[in-house]
Length: 113
Length: 115
Image (tube, rainbow over all chains, first blue to last red; front, side, top):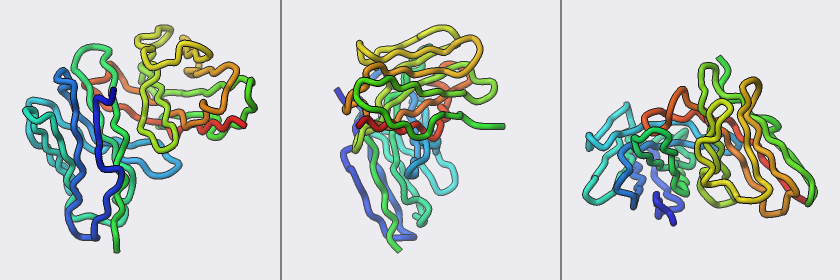
């Protein structure tokens, strides 16, 4: 049962344009959401997060949008740079003590020159 | 300030052997999580431990897999009698307190290959 779904296995975007990565979740108890970035042969690194009391969080070129009614979040990267080519994992958790973080399958982003 | 350290980075085992993967959390972190990434799959939660306690092992296979996080020393993920399906990247992550409100810091992973 996939509680966090990333339906696009891969995405190609021209350098300088906007990259939009999407994520859907099924568990209405989730109220904290994160995006991680992973390069080959490395561990995932934290990128940006958002709690359910917000609908937007921005950090430099990265913005995460949350639509609670649709159980959908998205990560916007603008402008996209070559170093953004990586696998992006969407993740979610509840705020209860000892809640684990559940990850999606990831979306591989290719930034084209 | 070293990050999450995992070793070995690569481990090759034959079917039926044992695999031991070690994880030293970041300094000051007392919560450890193990995730497994199968080829072409996402990160699957396996187990969440605090010092000397298993908090949530709902993602661990019922047989052959065990994990510990002793008072002293690294966390150990142990796989007995490995099979080819155990071949995967195993990632350890740590946090200073409970997850959900905190970001996990991941290690570089241990890649297990079962021949």
